[in-house]
Image (cartoon, rainbow, N blue to C red; front, side, top):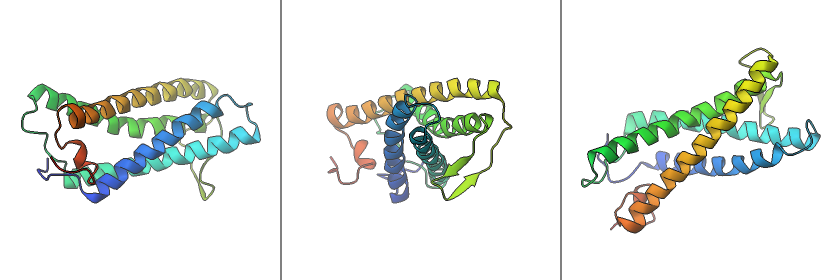
Amino acid sequence: MNHTASYNVPAIVMHWLVALLIAVTFPIAWVMVDMQDDSPEQLSWFAVHMSIGLTVFMLAALRLINRLFSGAPAAPANTPAVVRKLTGAIHLALYALMFTVPITGWIMVSAGGHAVSFFGLFSVPNIVVQDDGLHETMEGLHETVANVLLGLIALHTAAALKHHIIQRDDVLARMLPFLRKR
């Protein structure tokens, strides 16, 4: 762990960009699954959803590399050891899910026999052969891990707000540098 007072600029930018992309892709998913199956409108929203998922995957990889080389600020000195361990586990789970959700989606689409395009610029190769059973399995798994990710994001957000509002420490300011240090 790095013992700097805040995250570095690339970490902050990637954090908020990933947060924005995830915040955008969930409503897209909720709307597109209720559209007429294989309609042009649904297929175009699926393409956007998949492109955002690939972007989250790539940014998560860059974030992880940045974190491995730059570390992260230490927890406040008064943080109990059990809370430090729990926080570490939640951050690890968030990273794992930022990879798992896009990968399960990619496998699902590949197993469904569809191409995955990145914003129409290029196609990524299918990572499995067409398999209807695998497609159905991955559809359920993709939805489940996405919902777990959403729950952990809610927990992560609540913890950051607790630090800022109740504990009145600088934990949130480390990721929002415009906040005044306390």
